[in-house]
Structures are given as C-alpha cells and as structure tokens.
Amino acid sequence: MAEETVIKSDLQFVKRLQEYGGESLKKCFQCATCSVVCNISPDDSPYPRKEMIMAQWGLKDQIYKDPDIWLCHYCGDCTAYCPRGANPGEVIGAMRQATIEHYSTPSFLARLVSQPKFLPLLIAFPVLLILAIMKLVGTLGNIPAGKVVYSNMLPLLVIDAIFLSAAGFAVFVFLNGIRTYWKDLNSGVSPWKAKLSNKSVVSTLIEVLKEFIVHKHFKKCVTHYARATSHLMLVLGFISLATVTAWSAYYEWASRFGLIPHKESPFSLTEPIKWLALVGTVLLLSGIYLIYRERQNKANSASFGGYFDWLLIWVIIAVGFTGALSWLLRLANLASLAYPMYFLHLVSVFFLFFYAPYTKMAHMVYRTTALVFTKMQGRELA
Ligand code: SF4
Ligand code: SF4
Image (tube, rainbow, N blue to C red; front, side, top):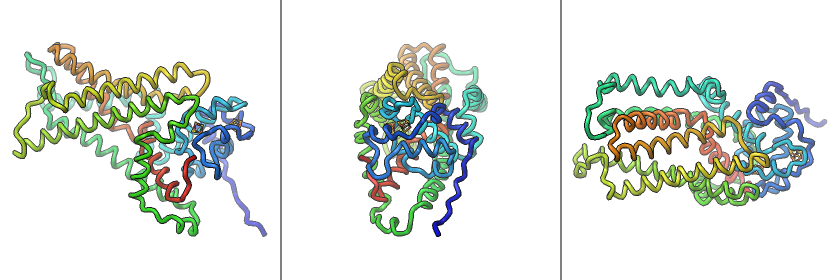
C-alpha cells in the first residue's frame, strides 16, 4: 500500500508571505511560464512554480528547507512574464524574508526589523548607545575646539570596542542560524544521495565564491540585466571599504605593539589606504544609486521590492552619504556640521552591522550556504 503523506498547511504563514510582498500569490494558476523563463533555474526540478504551490498552501517547513528560494537571484524575469500578475519574484523574496526570520535569534529582533513601525525604536538603540558612551568617556558636549579630529569625539579604542561588539554579535547570530539551516537542509537528503557527493565544504565554498565575485548567474537576467552590474559595484564597494577598515586597524594595533612606526590618523591623502577608501565609497554610492534608479524605472514591470528590500537600500545610502560627507566636512574643518555628520555615520554603520542577521544583508550568508549545499548535492544552476 502507498505511504500516506500528511500536508500541514499554515494559513497564518500565507498571510505573512502576503504582508511581506507576496500579496498576489493566490493569483497563480500553475502555468509554469515562470519556471520556463527563469534563465538560472536548473532543468531538474525547476523553480519558482513549485515554490508558488508551497506558498499558496502555506507549507512553511518545506519553504524553510528549500534551498531553491536562495538560488533565485531576484532578477524579476518571471514576474515580467507571469500571465496572471502573480509576481513570483516577489513571492520568493517574501519566502526568503520569512526564512531569515525563522533562522535568526532572538526572533523578536527579526520581527522588529520586518515592520516599519518599529524603525524609530531600532534607530534609537545605536543613537542612545553612542550618546551614553560619549557621556561615559566625557566627550558629550565637550569636544575640543579647533581642527576637526574625529577621535576627539570617540577615541579609536572605544570605536573598535563598539563596532567589534556589534560585528561579533552579528557573526554569532549568523553562525547559529547557519548551523540550524545546514542541519535542516541535510534532513531532507536521502542517504544514497548524500553518498554521491564527494566534494568538501571548503572546496565547494571556494567555487561558489568565485562564481559570486563575477556574478556568473546574475548576469543571465534579462529584464533587469543592469541590476547585476549595479549589484557587483555595490559588492566591490563593500569589499574595498572592509579592506580599508582592516588596513587601518592593522596600522592602529601594529603601531601600538611597536611592529610598525606610528601613523597619525586621519591619514594623508597621498596614502594608498585613502585612495582605496575613495574608490570604495564611489563604487558603493554609484552601485546603490543605480539600484535605486533601476527599481524606480521598472517599478511597473517587475520586482520593485517591499519594505525589507528598501530598508537595506536606505541604510546603505545612509552609510555611504554620511561617510562621504563626514570626510568632506572634516577637510573643510566645519566642526559644527562635521561632528553631527560623523555621529550619524556611526549610527548608520552600527545599524548595518548589528541588524545584519535580520535584514536583507543576511541573504549573502543564506544564499552562499544554499549554493554550497546544492553544489555538493550535484545540483547546478543553469
Ligand atoms: S507564478 Fe505566474 S507564471 Fe508562474 S506558474 Fe503561477 S501563474 Fe504561471
Ligand atoms: S526572480 Fe529571476 S532568478 Fe528568481 S525565479 Fe524569477 S526569473 Fe528566476
């Protein structure tokens, strides 16, 4: 006798997907056009049609464990061609948001990040924290007059302590999420299929990162072809600025331990670290501007995105602009504007780091994990 399968449908979960941007998911009538037009989807068990069924039925446990929702690069081709206006690209985006929420701890923070009404509360945390630390170190309302030097507002050691703690918290939440996610992904793999895979996690991860750095799959998008270039610029901007941060931390700590001669911060404009900072800022701001413009221009045809997408776009804009303006205002020595701008910069960078596991930033981590998993199972993108 055939084995019975019990399908647990969760209508509250369907409502949540609709709130997160998948409001049109019920319009889908399973024609499969989306799976045909998707240039990335593998021929074997393609997406996103099957995910549309899962969404309509509210099969949340299957959705959380489905690596295919991360193989989708949110290019919008399927949305543009869907004859029913069911917006499959947006529906898959809503599934990713719900999955990020599911794997992040503490879960209340994920809920706060997903709702616009809590944004003031989320911003208030770094604002009050940095003000409290300034009060503690005695610089609140007490910054020396004269040349603008940001370490007069918060010493570098204090800055390191604040941001290493925020980044450490994010890494801890990510590691915890990936551990559970990896276990869940493997729970659906049959033993004979697991034996097929003879690749190691590390070598597969290197393969995935190589493909990611050139945006191999993203370039196959048609409707939003330009999005791949803008996204790549953004990623290179992030990598450059992360290198600058590590480089200046090296200068700071290596000189403290007497390994290199002391370099006075802020560094001279002739230093290569400054050029890299400039290139990184230009790439970051240009990339995010192009993404913003492209989404506005194609708002009616495909993948405009919901609050979750736009929150990250606005945070990156805030980080880029406040960083560039802090630099310019310091060069102009306009203390009354430079210090408040630097304060806003610190708040926006803290927001980006600390809330990363709950915002769309988390897609980098879960997508990479899903790509490694699927590659190890021998399932390749088209
Ligand atoms: S989402 Fe649209 S294109 Fe895809 S199966 Fe449903 S109706 Fe067809
Ligand atoms: S948004 Fe793009 S990558 Fe994602 S399923 Fe649709 S066509 Fe494929």
